Image 1 (cartoon, helix red, strand yellow):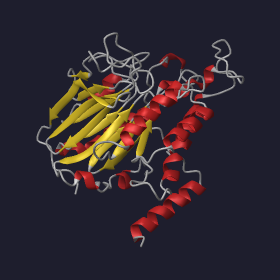
Image 2: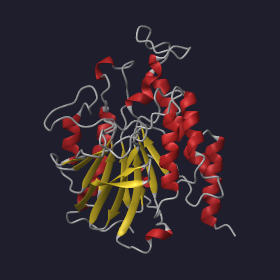
Image 3: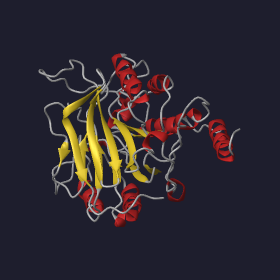
Image 4: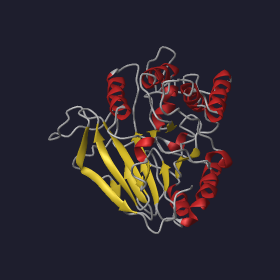
Length: 357
């Protein structure tokens, strides 16, 4: 018999679909799914409700949350290799050795932000029973302005009758979000996703950099206040940070000094980025130059190959386990479903308060 909670959940999902609530809400209606995809919200009162643990984690009370960060999918009409790599990754995640509580898609979900690419992304995701999926935007998700109506790349005619706002709206509609930045609590752990809000059609000087508005940065500052007690916070960005003490330009987080200042008062903050497509093999992805812990992810679609690497066409992602006293970050190679031995980090938490009950 369906419980009252299940009934309400189904009804909310049904209403969300009727009103165009997007991919995440529609997935909630699938009866076979063990963990229904939930719609993230930027409303603090709603997002502050932690989700129940899955059965696999009940055996280890110290483990609060596990999730995969899949960055730079680059789903493309011109190259179906990106879809094949995402299939590999999601096949691995959906049949993983232990429960996975969430998936975060870390920007550059598509190569050009076109509707047809989002349709292809949905088709791949719909093939698997997935945990809740959350996402932020990357620079490539704004690239539709470079394409003519015939799909040809043209810098001379940019924006080709299109706008950055159209790309943003496409992303928001797909996931059912109100804004490109939001927060959500999963198993008492805070996930905070930030996105660049403009691209070169609206603000030419940003180039390929990530521009965060005054509104978004003020929201981040307010959202972080709950972490005065030391509970860990996971902040997801797409473009990496510039050197400490500087603001970034193209291919970097632009207002980096403000971003760092907001996070500085808090311990146990983890910043997770993508964009660089760096291979986990032979490179250190853990940056220790900041007051927070910064990890740079590889790419599902376009990880740069290594001449001496075991994977000639690598497809990599990041697996994160959050315990009561530590965080474990691991690099995963999806092409052969293996761990990358050189990409395993354990970070002790400093005087963290217990997770939310």
